[in-house]
Amino acid sequence: MRPYKVKRETYKFSHSIVQGGYLYAHQTVENQIIPNKEGLKNMLKAVEKKFALIDVTIKIYDTIFFFFFMTKPSVIPQELIETIQTNLESIQCKWNSEFVYTGVYDLQELYLREELKKWGYEFDKGTRTNADLSNIND
Image (cartoon, rainbow, N blue to C red; front, top):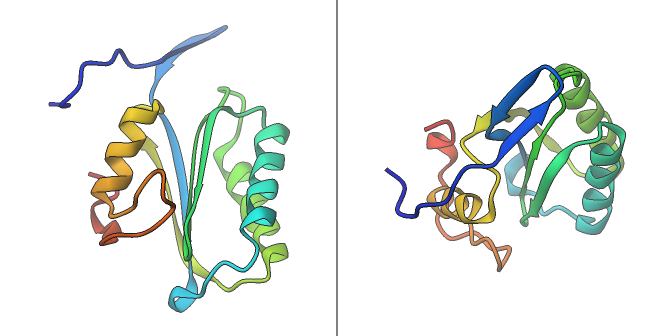
């Protein structure tokens, strides 16, 4: 049960109605600091534009980034993932071979704040408290 009562966002497309969204999260190797956070943000915004993503939230921390979004039904997830990973090479950082691509309950800020806090990250400060991504799919 959620501690707040906020109606979930509903997305209506020509052939479907959906709620929730998606998360792509990727961490650096051996906690290497992301050297070009602005470049990473710009790259993710270009991905947002290319795939016409909806309700995008980008949170970049020292060693990890979270990319929350909704896609149109025509977007092929593998193409989106490959585009992100191909463009990550331009950030000049070593990225972990594993990443997270999963569904999320809602894309509203209240929910994202709660989820990031659960995983050990402060929404506004861009800092890590006690990061534990082992329960990211819970």
